[in-house]
Amino acid sequence: MDRFSNYPVYHTIYETFELVERFYDPTFKKQLAVAQLRAGLVYELATSLVLPLSCQDYAEALRSYATGIYDLANKHKTQLEMYRVSFDSLFSAVSNFTKEAADFNYRLSQLDQNDSMALRSTNDQLMLLERAFIDPLGLPGRPFYRHIIFAPSRHNKYAGVAFPGIYDALFDIDSKRDQHKAWEEVKKQISIATFTVEAAAGTLKDVI
Figure 1 (cartoon, rainbow, N blue to C red):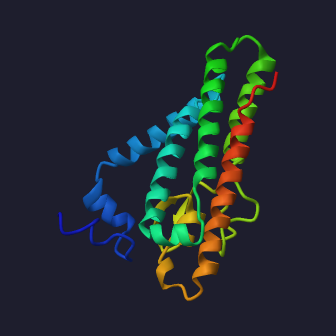
Figure 2: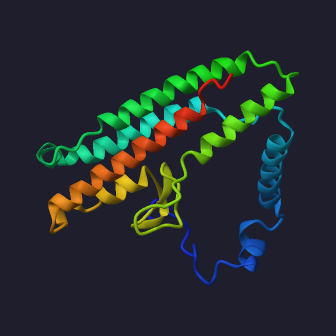
Figure 3: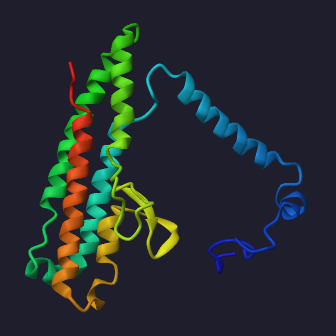
């Protein structure tokens, strides 16, 4: 099994209902478990007074993703210096987001759950947080993908990448004929990501 990344009939014409019924899950217990899990998540979202979303988890993820994309870019250290490409603004934005997330989380811990207006305001902020990561223009060449933090890789539709705009700009960049233009695109995508993270941080500010 170690020789294969997944089972051989994955995404073939042989991956059918009959295959599941006869071999994978004859009792449909696995199907039932997945359905129950999803129903449980929907129920929790629908019945929670405060949306069960953690902006601090988001902050930790952003720190990890920013470090990861910087490490990827730093494999081209000479070009970063030559074309003056800096990730400082992105790290600063992530730092601001982390601070606002911590402040928001503290206010959340003090929230009076009998105050309907405070509940509404808090839930609105949590909803706006995710929307803040959406770019109406979409990713370069892929306007149907609009999330600045998460998207499938342009070069591998089965693999998700963080900061996809920056990742795609860096992909195979050494082979680009116009290196100046290629690195200007990297800088542009860093700017877009920075603006987006700062905007998301703004949705978490105290509104009272």
